[in-house]
Length: 191
Length: 271
Image 1 (cartoon, each protein chain N blue to C red):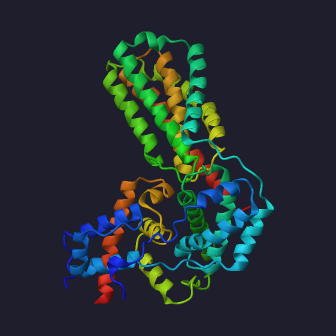
Image 2: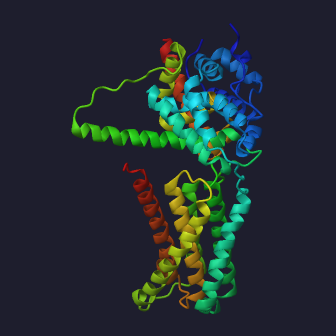
Image 3: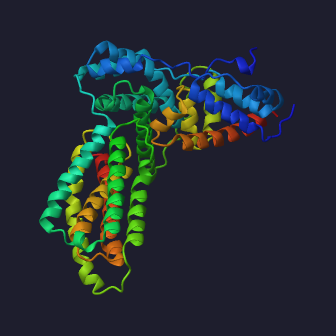
C-alpha cells in the first residue's frame, strides 16, 4: 500500500484542451460536442446525483443541464477555464431540480400518501460510491458541493469560487469546516 | 497514535488548500510529520486525495444528449469580456442620466459646495462602477466575482447613505413630506424605464441567481434616479436626501428583488 504522501493528485481530470473544445463547440463542430459530452457527462452526473439520490432523476437533470449549457454556450469566453463556467450552470440546474422535486412531492402528499421513494441507487457499481456518498451526505449542502467540486472534478479553490459566485476566502472557510467534520466522522468510524 | 485534534491539524487544512490551488503540490516536512502522528488527519488526507468514483453516463444517455445538441447546433459568437460589458452598462447609465439632468435643470448643483460636489460624485461614480461590474459578472457563469452579487447592492446603499449623512448639513425639516414625496415619485418613475434598459443588456447573457440579479438591476436603476435627483433637486439637506433620494434607491432595489422572484416563479409554474 502506498504512503499517503505518495498518493496521486486529486486533479486527475485536469485537461488543458477543454477551452479549445469549447471554442470548437461555439463554432458548431459536431465532433467537439461529442467529445465534450463524453468527457464531461460523468463528472456532471456525479455532481447532480449526490443530492438527487435517484438515478433516473439525475439522468433527467443531466439532460436538462446540457440543454442549459447549449443555450448558454455564447457566454463562455475563449481561454477562460471551462469547469467553473460549466459547474455554475450545473449547480443551478441541480438547485432548480431540487426545488421542482420538493414542489412535486408537496403536491403529491396533499392528494394521497405516496409510496416510499427509492433512494441511494448507486450510479457506479460497487460499494465505493456508496461509501463516498455517505460521507458527503453527512456534510451540509454548501460544504458538500465545495468538496465535491474539488475532489471529484479536480477544481481549484478559485475555480470553485467562480462556479459558486463566491470568494476564495469563503470557499476555504467552507472547505476547512468540512474537513473538521470529516475528520470526526472518519475517526469515529475507525473506532 | 494520537487521535486527539491538535493545533497542528490546521497545517493539513492549509496543505490541502495549496494542493487544490497548485494541483498536486508536495507536502511540507511539517505536514508529513503531522500525518505520521495524527490519525484523524491521516484518514482525512487519504480520503481527500484518493481517487473518487466518477459517475457513469450510459452510452445511450450520452448518445441521446449528443443527438439533442447536434440537432440544434449553430455557430455562436462569444460574448464580450466583463470589462466591455461593464463599460456598456456605464454608457447606458450616462446616456440616460445626462439628458434627464439636462431636462430637469441643475438646481442641486448650484446648492452644493465643492467638497459636497466632489464627495457625492465620487460615491455615485464608485457605486455605478461597482454595480456595472457586478451585472457583467452575473451575466457570465463562472466569472470570478470579487464582490459577491448578494453584497453589491447593500454595499452601494450603505455607501450612498453614509456619504449623504457625512457630506450634507442636517437642518430642521420644513414641509418634509410635501417636498419629499415628489422626489420619491419622480425617482421611481425614472427607475422603471432605466431598469428595463439595463435588463435588455443583461438578457444577452445568462443570469443564474435571479434574486441577486433583480436586486442589482433595481439598485443600478435606483442609483441612476438618485444621481439625477442629486443634481436637479434644490433641497440639499441630509434628512431630505437620505429619506427621499435614498428611499428611491432602497425601494427600487426591493422592487427589483420582488419582481425578479415573481417572474422567476411564474416562469417555473407548470402549465
